[in-house]
Length: 334
Image (cartoon, rainbow, N blue to C red; front, side, top):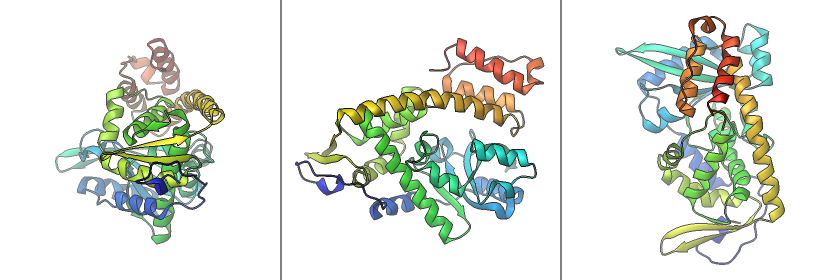
């Protein structure tokens, strides 16, 4: 196993570990233990008022978590629920949430002379566990939750344990899917930077390379710590190379597995573009000012500004198709 090779130079045989390594779980538990700021606490209180007893847990991730500034941009939250039917009055919203999770909502609140803004995604705890596992093909969930994530609220200890397990499983899934796509010898920086690039490109969020580098740098120590531990749970031969304090890794993965991985990432990328457009369309039903949000999101993630006139703003679904065509013509689908 990868971890077993620490400090040695030979190739150590790896086995598929069915259980999550206890050290990895401990790291996840430590990293997810954060206190909500007063502004984020206000958002959580409002979410609890909206959805009440159906809420099992609340996760905080994304740029505001990384920067520590929750009054700039949108606070990204995931609201974990027991069952979609218990969350919504309208059956159609529950059905859409089940068919294409998650449903995303916008929330803003006045706070100490400012406005704190959030987009929160509703996801069942069952779908979180599936979405972070190898049974979930696309990287939408495991590509997010392999990154540092704060667990701000859970109903009880049992839910806490299930969420920690899902977050740890996301790390393992990420590594199993990424390792065959990178060079056999790599650093933790190369593994995570390249893997996050694959994940981001599998959605309608063509991030600039400098931003992907910042994703790693924002939590470099975390990624360095979990890499050798998570290698224990991937089914590839691996070794850890320590060259005068500079740690790198080497895996032995067959050409067949690498070919299959390259093909599946190609499929994942095409699938992700389609799913992203469908999620944007679905988001029109849950976002106040949905067209403005979509315009902001497109410009933020692709760097392309798309104009929409007042007439189209009155017809969000039509605006979405026009936006998609204009974005495509300007090279936004990369």
